[in-house]
Image (cartoon, rainbow, N blue to C red; front, side):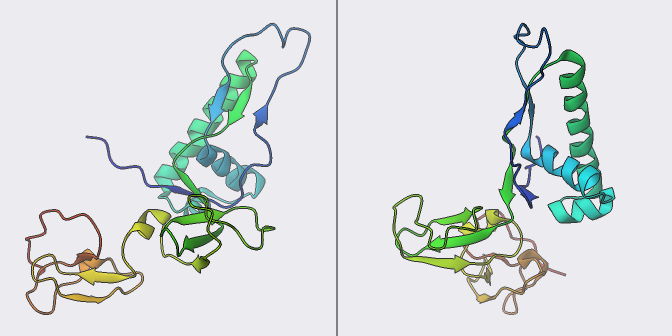
Length: 195
C-alpha cells in the first residue's frame, strides 16, 4: 500500500501558468503539454533561483531532503522532455498548500487561505459570509480539521492541551497510561500502552 502523500508548502505561487515553444514548426506539433506540478516548480525555484542547497530547500517546503531531491529530479526530467520534444509546459496540480494567511469562517466552520495579500477582508468561499477570523496552525493545513489544540486519550476520554512541537501520540495519558491522540482525529486501534 502506498504511503500517504503529505501536502508540500509553496512559499510563492508561480506568476505564470506555463511556457509555449516558438519557432517555424512549433505550431505544427500537437503533442500534449508536459505538466510540471506546483511542488516541482517550487523545488526549481528554491534550488536554482534562490540558490539554496537541497537541505535548506527541503526545510522550506516541509519535506525530507530525499523527498526534495526526488521532486527536484522529476522537475528537471520534465523540463528536459519539453525542451527536447518541443512540447508546451503547464504548471499546475500537486498536493500542496500555499504559505499564506489562513482564515476560519465562523458561520460554516470552513478553513481557507488567501494567497492574494491585497484583499483586506476575504469572504468565505463556501457560504460567502463576512464573519471571518484569522487562523494559525502548526504544520500543514491537513490538521485544521481537528479540534482546537487538544490531545485526548482514546481509552478513558481524558483531554489535555496540545503542546506544539510534541506529537499527541508521543504523550501518555496521566490517568491510564495509553498513548494520546489528537482530539477530533479518526479513531483507530490505540490500545498500546506508552512505556
